[in-house]
Image 1 (cartoon, rainbow, N blue to C red):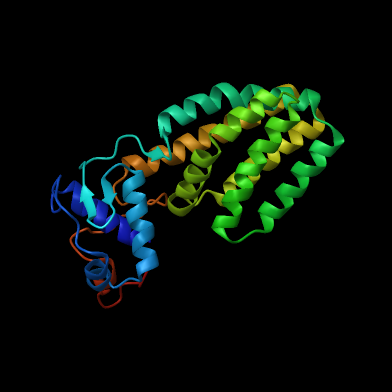
Image 2 (spheres, one colour):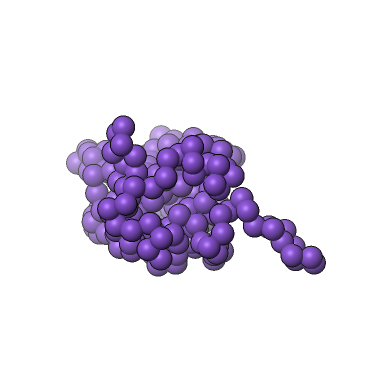
Length: 240
């Protein structure tokens, strides 16, 4: 999917597909890029999240921008979402360290164990949002949970985006474990630090994806002059 996204993003940013222009049909893109429809649709969803395209039911996908600025996750821009998360989730982690119950810790530990074993991105993303809800619950203030509930859909969309394009899952699991360990220790300072670090890494990964055309979170670029399925390695060149 990353190579398909890199190709399409590159074509849009270079002007091959101009603002206002309709992208070729899914069937045509699948043939041109030699990819399956599910893979193509993932890439098209990512283009929309980046704000480069909009999809109009029954009409197709249209280019609306030629540069990525601030991705949108559900109803919220990424910058707005992160600003609120910093103001809410960091102090919430501190309160949770001071107020958590044995039941809260058991629930968080169980969730974390499941997340570390999970290989399916969709299932992991669902548990990721549950994890952040569980931390809010551990703060013993129902308003905090309500705030996280309000942004839950946006959190899930952001999590899926970062995992598909930024390879965040394993790193995120480690960061979540640091948060849980701080809660177990009852250390407000460590909990605040762990959540701050977690959100810093989210921001860094998001910034990397947005700033690097065809980056995909791993530093790999793709020559948008060639369709992903048509690359042919020269003799002696390793195949990707």
